Image (cartoon, rainbow, N blue to C red):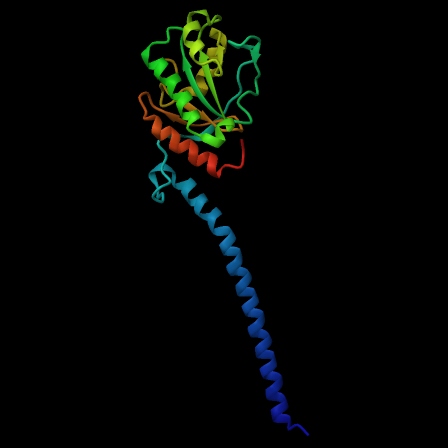
Length: 221
């Protein structure tokens, strides 16, 4: 016959073991939750910190981030060099390298168009996820650019009438400097957001690195 003292001790030991098991399971769930949430927490902290805050080595961009990103829609009826018009939702679905120039496409303009092509070509297997767009401001004809466009037959080119240029101007105004004459190259994400740009004379190798990184980790476009 079991002694009451031993029976009580066994019950207490059983209760302690159950409590320990319960605490262990709860702690495991908490730890598992932290493991899943920690990447989002780190990303959130990095987002709040911005370029002036803490960033791990290797995550810096060669381009300049546009914060917050600016949603873009092309003006309705933008004439295309290929004939017809460029659809308003053209900027959605792919990563877009965009350059805004004029009909007097000089050396800097031609260099930027060359960089657009080379940066895209450098993406290898992801090349189909990237498109190029050359918008020519304040014009209704692309005839003066015939020789330039002949070099880039697979690049989308559109002519922006003065009213269309004025419509887009505020979206590309950065630090009080308009797009016209700034010779920037812009990067637009597959949701149609202007999210990064490169100053005139930027090293195309930096553009290649940025885009490779985005294509590697992005689940869109």
